[in-house]
Image (tube, rainbow, N blue to C red; front, side, top):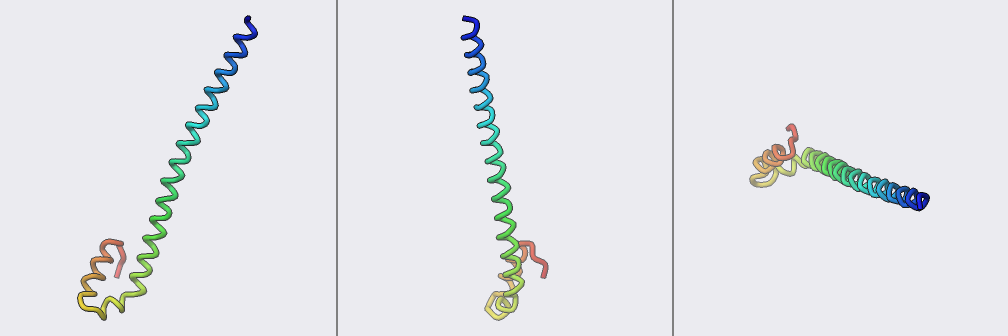
Length: 80
């Protein structure tokens, strides 16, 4: 009977370690998603900044474009 108890204890420890491993992998996945979303947001932010800089003349040609350009530069933190 003692050998069976050892096997059961070993099985319980193995299952517990597996559950901890799954939990840690889930936490790492969540962290990865947060970092990936931040990288995507930065990439989009940089693209918008570049687009604003490239289209500055277009904004000057349209009615109210100066104000719109100024507001967009403030929102996306673009230096004129």
